[in-house]
Length: 336
Image 1 (tube, rainbow, N blue to C red):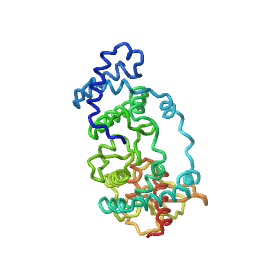
Image 2 (cartoon, rainbow, N blue to C red):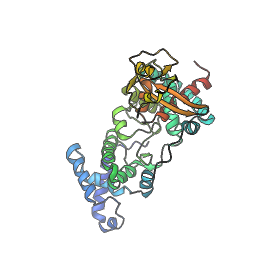
Image 3 (cartoon, rainbow, N blue to C red):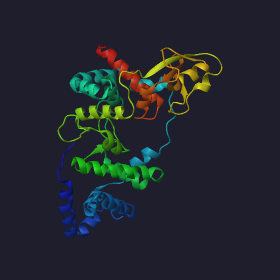
Image 4 (cartoon, rainbow, N blue to C red):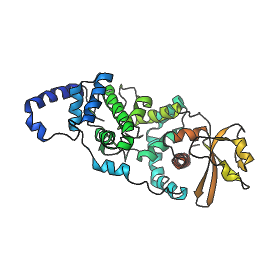
């Protein structure tokens, strides 16, 4: 991440130059220059957050509408894979080997994050592995292009992405970075842990104490930020993530959770034919789910920490992939 102190000053002088060039600039106007939506947005940022309108217009003059982003977000979702197809996408020998290397390389920082936030090192490593293969795939779109395209040209979720655009411009100002330099996914997710701008501002931390939060190229800050995110979303230190269940009888499916939020307790599930492999309190709320494994259906109870993982990505299979990759990392590393 290129630290660009005083980007606002740079744009102020650049905008002044544009006034002199006039017609030359008009010939190469950006996709978002002069549109009513952008003018309204810039007006809000000026009024509510004290931005200088000309400086923001300088940013939007450079922003580009990307059809590839609109194509990516609006294409029909692929058929939801079964667990026995989904799991091998994330739990691979290559990802495990790279994860062990990443853990070894950043061992002291991971240990400090675990100490401060109570989130196990292997879970932090696993998230970064699932999200970006340890920084290999962090996204090649400029965040300003992604959020402008989706905020101004994708009506179904325009309000959400305009909010993220606002958060992005605020974080660029706070971190003193040029908003045109930061890269991310087609949806604007950023850095090693793929934080959206609102998550960055709420949960990211300066874990190496250098005065800047950099989740793009600074693994220390990325590690601390993932741990901070989980802690703030209810991770309980030392608690398990899931419990395998055996089932019997014809009421088993009545116990399955619709969605992610835990709606039934261990005791209620027991009455429907579920029995946990672990000693769980009857009053404990759990997310009850079935996965299609290689050897047939698997029944699981997701505990509080499982729910915390789903707050990163609202998918039972995602949370399970993160959890099982973390277990494989511990095994491969040979440290209990």
